[in-house]
Image (tube, rainbow, N blue to C red; front, side):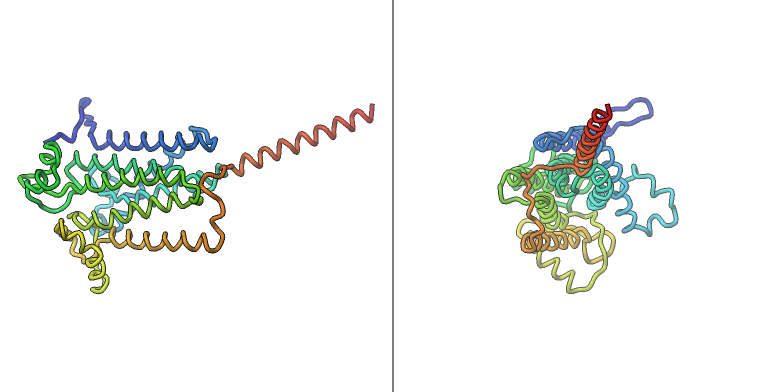
Length: 325
């Protein structure tokens, strides 16, 4: 079994989880910076965006998790801030990052969707890499499986099989399923962003659609899903949509007593909503700007206009001065 602690400096333990998340953020940043140069956006903008997005994501991820597990925190409020004890949710992280970076982009005069398009490949590759932090911690796995399923059916290497052996029981490497799904999604996004038909905002929407489809099916094998109790017809619908997975996988148990995995429900709603948004934006003429069109900050436009106005005023002043002489 691989150790979750990479190294220690006295009483300070540096864990692989943090190192992997840091690497994921850095690689995502580099991808965004490279694409940003194509639109003449300076690297410092994306660095500042990361410095705002990461804390916002952590706060959002924690709030999302605590909201669903409030019964575990209401009598011990101090535990809410002890994030190192575990308990974050990826959808909460995305919501937090979107809120935090939205205001920064507006302050810089950029359209949120234009910058989100540039960041989308970086987001999905960051998630693909970040899931290996779950691997090191032996968390976010699926239900029990046989060792032969991992070795002979999935043909996984020894280091993954051994890490999925938790206290004598082998589990689905759900982290790996999601990581591979996201890598395929990255390739798709990189292909899409060079297509002439792509409109502004649609790469970002495509990222959410692709991720949510994968999350819907992968979530079904996990045993740590945040769940809710909903109507029987909705639970039946979710089970029916997931049923093709039963050809290979057994569904994971619902840990908290509900009958609907909230991440599955949210993923389904996101896919439906964004497909409708894309169709409506095109039909109503709201998606006239293409992905490849130049990106211009309204702040720089205002600054350039102010400079031109000042030049006109200066010329006028010089003309009046010359006439006086």
